Image: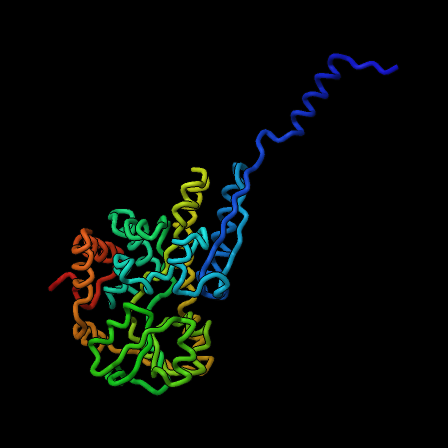
Length: 357
């Protein structure tokens, strides 16, 4: 006959308590969308950096586990459709290419409206993101689109001009059709008879190949990724500057249902992702130029004098940007001054004073 002692019962009870979890881990689904393909730098790093970093930090407490569903390359939305996709709840988290939405997100044009200032993606990303946190405009615009702003991303060191035929100076761009993705088309207004043609990064290869345009504005890393040297083997190195083009946002309804711990982690990792992507953009800038040359491309540097002439021939698009924000009830003039001051503090002064009328 078996006998169970009191101490044995206590030990068994303790063992059972130890074996049972104190609290069940909550699983949270997150649908991530971007219209660009997985090979695009910012998409790749969302997969390789953002998601693992969120998972790692949540694992520290063990309270929550994300169940990620990644959808890229047009499976849910096209490149221009991320803003609306997140607004409608087709995705929970997305990387919005803001240059496609200048009317809905005018404040996002702050770096694009100040060319020829800085070709350092890290400095520009930090300055823009700080402006977003110091002034309400950017958050207000995303709130109007049913979204919560997390962080700005800068994925390019500087726009350059890639052409199908030989160019040796800015003057050689006169009369040419040049593709751009949005606000950067305004840069062409200072070049005689140059015509801007709106397009997207995934379109540029075919646009040049078919002769729809003579040149395209993009950056060396993208030129290497999308094999632009095959159709545009001449790069005019004008160093137009780094521009914020990506913003990580979250559907507002989805966000409101998230636990505070998850919100805190997403906010923190978004800033780290901002810095991470910008650093990669700078790290691979030189290698991307070398890859372009190796693929058959030729690079021609624009002189400092030529850059100054080009900058000063443009309309003051920075002032126009500020006035648009002012008319919307935002602090456009103050934002412009604060942004340029941040870049100046970081060691970057432009060839033109965009705050001057």
